[in-house]
Length: 383
Image (tube, rainbow, N blue to C red; front, top):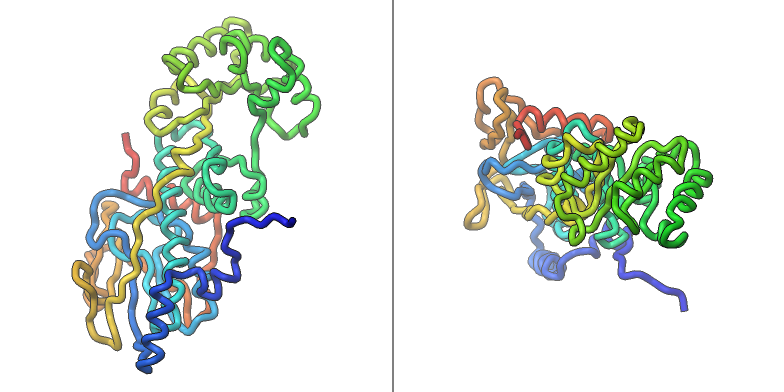
């Protein structure tokens, strides 16, 4: 029997089938009543600025979902930090995008959560190499989402090979404990040498040095076993780690004393920003996994704020079409679109879709640079 996976196919998303059932009922009711009002709808997480910054991600997929529909859309640039107010605005006949709300929010909510966590890790160790190791903790269909969002947040690389195929970047990685175990206790040198002899020259020679014995012992043995070794990785499980900082310092001391001061030390295994701050002066790089990949999606909502040119909103939501601004001091401001913004402020809402055509270019490198610059501007993660 051919195996299938529990994955909603792309065609179901673009057709509007990947929707909550009550939107189907909404379309039926509006069709029955002959109603299809022109509306303005906005995607927001918080109505007013909260001081808790998030990094907008997922906009490329959201734009693709809106493409070909009889509507206009404006949005913040992907890679912009925000702490309230709308990130996306849609204008058009409501039935044109009613069924798309579920997928649209998903395209924004999950990537924004992951990108924000990645930015937290990046800012915790700004001068270190930080890699994304976490796609194993989520459904495999989300691998590209996780790795793209991790790069957007400023991480230096990722491990998921198929995700690299999707986003046009090459995955990286060295060796797991399973490779060491396949050679057996006491035969670590064979494993390190086999790896060195087999993998492409472009692959960094980073030896995993905590499989069977003390980290210092295995680090020194690896340094002697592989002539062109680039570094060692400590992936010691938390239950055996003890004082991880002390372990890293001891490995560094021992490598230096043995004449291997040029070798880098990389750390991984359940690390988050607090760990990176604690270790960044004694380690050269980090692999960050579940802290980034398992980020909670941001709780975006889509709300109608105008109907046929009249103000409208449900209780607890702010009526009217809004503009969003960045002030020179890094502030994030929200105001009504028909009013003047703060003096000297830059408007952040930019055209995304016009009459169904995506009118924005998505340059991923520029988006990564924007996220880093905006993080500096608003003081994200300053410590």
